[in-house]
Image (tube, rainbow, N blue to C red):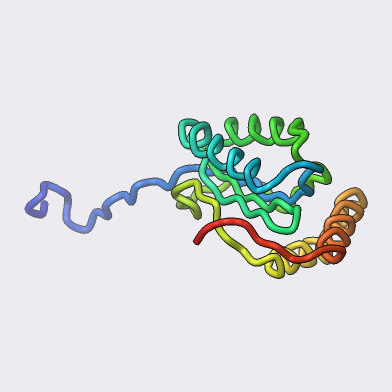
Length: 158
């Protein structure tokens, strides 16, 4: 027997498959000379280039520390990771998470989100507590010391 749409009764409709998305989450320290205007230029360039490549995410900047979540096709994310490691506007890059899975995007639009510096500290402290890589431990400690050394300032928009 068939229903009014010609589908056999009792047959389940296939759900559309979720896309395979690769994500990369990292934090880093801004290089000397990176200011609010430079961060604005980084976001503008990301909005132009990343969306064309199917990459979305969020960039947080506060107290000289970057925190970024990017997601998209694995090959495009890998190219962006290589580019990030060669970018002189930041250093002490610490990979917090990366993997590929079938799911909906967490950030459907590229945007600069405002996150208080204290929230950045909590994320970094959690990463420090859970990492076993000695290079990441050292970099995370330097980033946290940097946050503790100066005024806590956030940049962004809601």
